[in-house]
Length: 91
Image 1: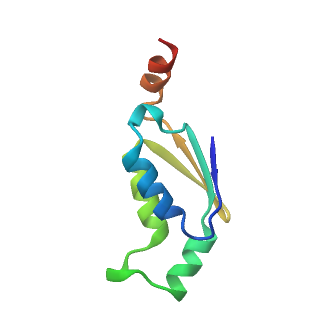
Image 2: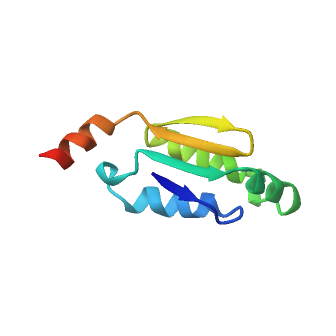
């Protein structure tokens, strides 16, 4: 499990993390606070109307994570590719 708390910059860390790590090394669970990203979008909007949380969510979905909103937090559980990842580690 990976716990991320970097005050609204989670989407940047996740972009690099997901692009650099091979799929079989991605963590099965990622948890982070989403409220700061939402607040930053209102105060400091990104170019072209992009939303920080949407960037993070789309990226995690593309890597096989199911997303669960928990109030101010988001829990991402990797459902696609997890069995293959587990088998690679165990062999």
